[in-house]
Length: 144
Length: 126
Ligand SMILES: Nc1ncnc2c1ncn2[C@@H]1O[C@H](COP(=O)(O)OP(=O)(O)OP(=O)(O)O)[C@@H](O)[C@H]1O
Ligand SMILES: [Mg+2]
Image (cartoon, rainbow over all chains, first blue to last red):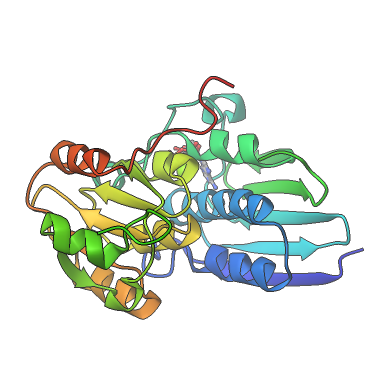
């Protein structure tokens, strides 16, 4: 059972606030005394997930659950969904628009980064309905 | 120019190399532990070391979020690019030093390397 649960809203194309939710989560984990190595990985996953909702998804939210032995990040949106998940997970694959690419997004590294930095990673998506990404971080993990 | 720990602060470095501090002066006492260059945000997000000085040509305000999340010491906008007004506002709010360098990223990285900011990957060869 979660000891602490927080929810943050993410809005499509809202660049001004993009990253804010992950920054709040990072500050929360810091205040709770979570190890910096774990905070670093949660921050990467939160940011990449948040940016994907802003850029490709729709409106959505990011939920963080802090349990005695783990942290859970759940990122959901009601956007267009992902037709081919293995393809989307491929390093370098991106459908980012020219405008986003000019801003340095669209390397096609966000989802691979998330998978690499979380201790558990699951994604499901329905075209036309939205996408869910669920990531877990063990508080006893030795992963750097 | 280096302090006891052998690492320059942002302010010391700016003075030494002639970098212009555009915003976030509040944080200019931070020590520079390492360096990173990159313009692709998910590469920087995944690989920039904590406490680094980050050289980029991106000037939009999302770079401040990246710097905060990666616990960077400072951001340098190279290549003569100018940060957006929102970027300046946010860097001031958050106390993340935002600097400018008129030359290329490569040139500045070379200067940083020469004064001992090596940016070597601690995982290399593992
Ligand atoms: N929430 C989402 N909704 C719809 N499509 C998505 C979502 N997240 C990812 N995608 C699709 O998966 C692709 C790959 O995502 P990934 O995060 O790996 O790269 P990117 O966002 O395109 O670029 P980067 O993250 O490197 O800036 C995206 O280009 C997009 O087509
Ligand atoms: Mg992405």
